[in-house]
Length: 333
Image (tube, rainbow, N blue to C red; front, side, top):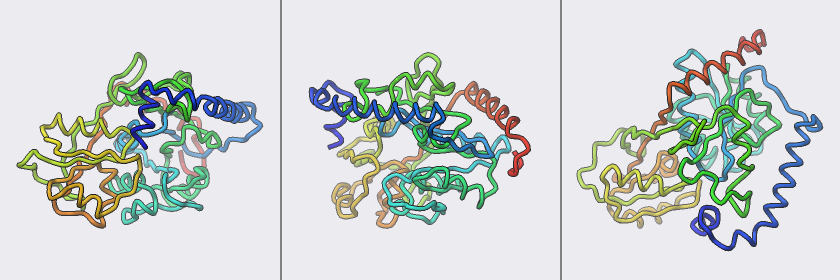
């Protein structure tokens, strides 16, 4: 199914024309919703601490999670105390839920589970990001909130927006959902001062590279280098081909590769059959969904985002301005 959808969104499949009427309807609905917020007919909620929203204008992954991890470490290095809120995609959550390192991906979502296990960041997931932020502020000592994947959640006022784009696939065929991958039109990229390109960057964008951070067993213990380059690879991310290509660039020989739908749950029997005794390599986001039935010969490849000093300097300067504006609130910002 995902392959067929990507043929429509990023190829030249004729089926996109059948879906255009639904895209027009989507455009009307989303445009009206934005207009209601811009006119003040729908209220936004401002928080007493700076809010940095990290999102994208396309459906599917573009590199938001590595970006969030990068921001957490950048802010901590500057003395800030960041916390994260998120929707908790793919799981049934009706009330704000604190994310702990022992939570499973099936309870809080794969990305929140990964973020907290990797960084130990205070984090809350909820469909209502404002309710999530309120619990975060009540329970943790945070002075900056990073909203993971909340670009279109306009009810939450934001101080800084960061849009992450796939530098290779860009905006696909340029159509809105469902005929294309866009949640909002390409014009949206011109409304924020921070556009990060995961890969090739256009003019005015900040390039981001994903750097190999090592091979790990699924329990988080660092793994030695594999002596035999023959492996099986799998990925349930927005752009699995990027992951497969990175493995080949590192010298692995992909005996088999399997792309699952983004955020797809995994079946133990299916993965054991897929690996067939060979080392099975996966992303860190996928690994959190397999810990309970991990096999000794399964590994995940961790990556770290690398951004430019210019990005760091401009973001920190912008954040300092926001802090100065909010100075004196009850959270000490």
